Length: 162
Image 1 (cartoon, rainbow, N blue to C red):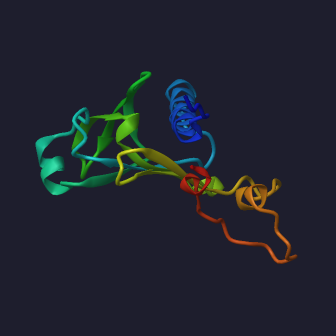
Image 2: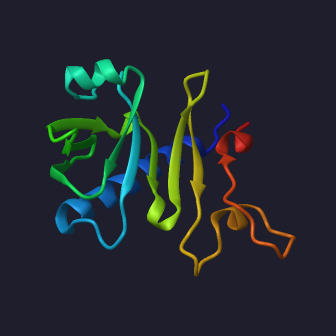
């Protein structure tokens, strides 16, 4: 019997947990400073709850922005509910974490992208840089041999799988 550590699924849970922790903080204290989020999700996920006109308009995926106005943010272990404004029409949404494809906070150049593989295993691709005072994430993953700063690099966890 061959046993191995399933790093892909461990990362999956960790990154979803990170999103949950951030949203819990926002629900409690509001958005600090210039922070705001672009969240892209699968509108066809069976547990997503959005108005029919939104699912008709965005039949595959949709990106929402949590920034200036939002209401009723309720964060659970499975996902979050929020009311957002669409052309002066407040609409309630429910987005499970498993439906999220990307989570980006451009104010600090941080982002996560969740990709579904053909074999139905899920892997995380992390697209992120830390605050300017810290080393960029790509330098933590792969040593930088040049003195010139590098752009953020997409690192797929699939290359570490057997």
